[in-house]
Length: 320
Image (spheres, rainbow, N blue to C red):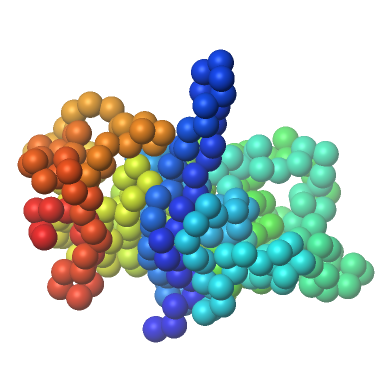
C-alpha cells in the first residue's frame, strides 16, 4: 500500500520560562516520534491526557511548526515549506477539532462556516458554493434549511457534524480527527463514529484518529499506535494489538475498558503514580516510574521501537 503520511523522528518542544531570572525549560510534548499512515487507512493514536497526541496531529498538519524531524505527505517533505508553498497542501489535509462549539465562529452561519475553506482555497466559484455546501450538509446529516442558522442553535452532536462538513469542504485526502467524540454523549458518539466510517469509505479518506478511549479506537481504526509522554511505545494492527498487547502500558489501558456484562470480570492492572512531567521526563524508559516490571536497565537505557512479527512494534526492554 502507498504511504500517504509519514513522520520521522518528529519533535515538538514548547519553551517556557521558570523563576525570576526566566530560565528556559523545554516541554517535550512530542519527542522523536516515527510512524506512517497508508492511503485510505485509519490510524488510531491513543494514550492518556497530556501524552502529546493532539500536539502530534497538529504538528503533522503544520498548524504547529516542528522543532525537529521530518513530515512527508505523498512522498514530499513538507517540514520546512513556507506559507505560500504550504497553502496548496492545506486543502488536502484538514482537521476535526475536539470542541464542537469552541471551534465554530458564533458570528458566522453554518453555511458561511462550511464555505469558508472553499473561499480561501478557491475550490469552486462563489456562485456555486451554496449548492456545494447544501450537498455536503446532506452527507453529514444536516438539513438544507439549516444553512442560515448559527452554531448556538444546534446541539453538540449537530455542531460536530458542522465541523466534519467544514473538513470535507476542500475534498481532502487526509483528516486529523482530534478527540472528535470525547465531548459528546455516548449515544451521539456512536452516531458520529458511524458517520465518519461511512464518509471514510465513500470519499476514500485517510484518518489519524486521536482518542483516549480504546473502545472507540477498536470500533473505527485499522491500526493503533499507543503514545506515552511524547513517545510511541507500541504499534500494531487493531486485532493484533487488542488480542496480543505486549507493552505494560498498553495492557493497563486495555484492562481499564469496561466489560458490558456484570457476570464477567477482567483482572485490572492499576497504574501507580502520576504521569511524569514532560519538562523533566524520566531517564531511560519514560514508563519505568509506573511499570510493574521495571529493571535497572529500564532506568538507564531508553528502549527503541523495534519490530516483532513483521507487524508489531514495541519499545520495551522486556522484548530486547
